[in-house]
Image (tube, rainbow, N blue to C red; front, side):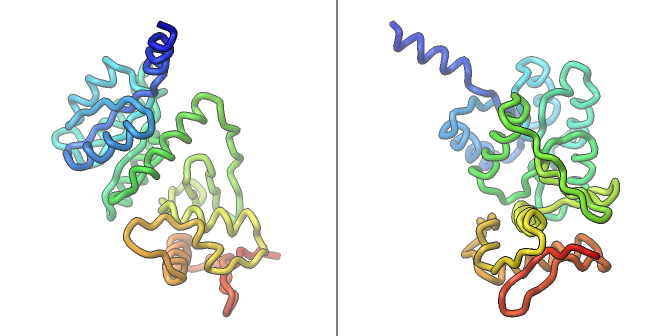
Length: 240
């Protein structure tokens, strides 16, 4: 009887994720990882059904595709965040590559995070776990890192230039965070490879160079803090 009671309590304590996604293959992939990670997964294939599910079930977190039939993920996010009863529910967007403007809008509407497609289910669930841990007070909120006109929001994986959001990939964020946390220190490419999240093939020195080039482009032509140290790697320089 005690064993049975323990199992029941454990089941009741499972965090509930609502996935709103119209692609069946993605739903199946996330369902498998949810089971492996110990979460209860609720599923909806469109925004209207998803919103009714949120009202009825009050999930712990919503994973929301941007491109949905009928009401888009952006429309749904706005509706959730405008609701006094529902706005506390955290939202992670799933977004196809090339939807940068939608990602920015989604974050401005109040989404907590985004994960670009194609994605690793393990990375998605690590982001879910981190958000839920912060919401439950189990993780100390990290202060943003300020430099020049930029703000790096560690907890939200967000870079801002003044009030403008600059979306970064997980790899770009990881590299920038390491460089700026240890500003002045030179990192080899092999050391920076540890920050890469690459599900498309082997990770090489060239991957690091590509991400550095992308960071420089996103941060603007006048940004020169990320310095190439010839024959070694990169460092983040303090400006005098």
